[in-house]
Length: 108
Image (cartoon, rainbow, N blue to C red; front, side, top):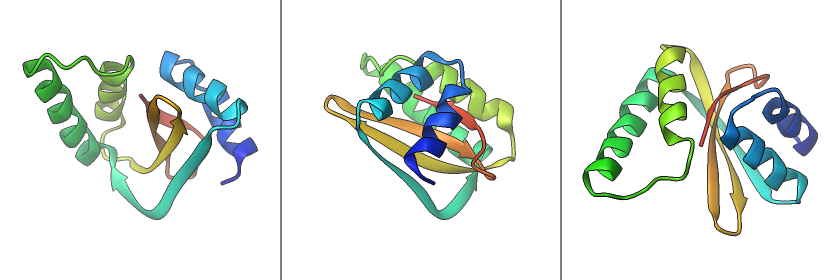
């Protein structure tokens, strides 16, 4: 997946996190798509919802968008997704892309 394709996928997503990740990509931030394997959105929901709960329990404030991403992973059910990242100076965005790489399932 090249930069233009990633920008197109993020541009189609209306979430605050996807728009912020898109702005970082357009500003030249690095990105990586992990194409070696997919996972079910449900498996990733299990992991990220647990992480969200731990953050809540320990009074850690996650980057905006985590709750929405967790909800979107749950809604995607058993759909297979790829993970990707956009790295920016203050951290990184985590993206979950559809198996055909045409849409962003979730981003935070």
